[in-house]
Image 1 (cartoon, helix red, strand yellow):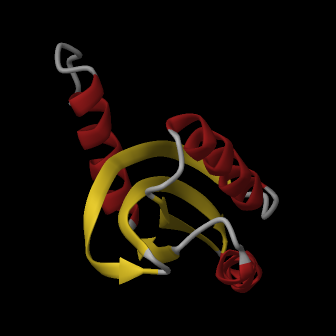
Image 2 (cartoon, rainbow, N blue to C red):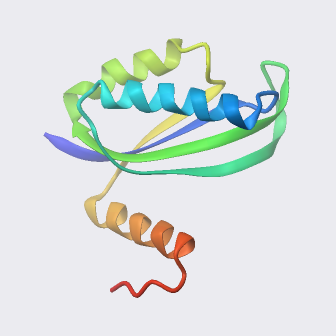
Length: 117
């Protein structure tokens, strides 16, 4: 059964923006390999962490909203868990109306003059 998910990934803050883009592309390829339909990708930016994780005091957050068959999730979580390029990840299930609401919020934030329902 296909469900909607949000994946948030934390990259090390010591990496340059170009490296973050490259790593972000690798994570997107992992998600796409599960035959997911990626709806939206966005950055939450660089943040100071409350405590050090793997000797990092800062991190870069990236998120993806996507739909995929729920049978592909265990494989994806295992690949993310074993990935050396990310510090932490969080994968959550979204209700269908919540997915639409988040997409509209992100589009409005990027294009404030655009008229949406």
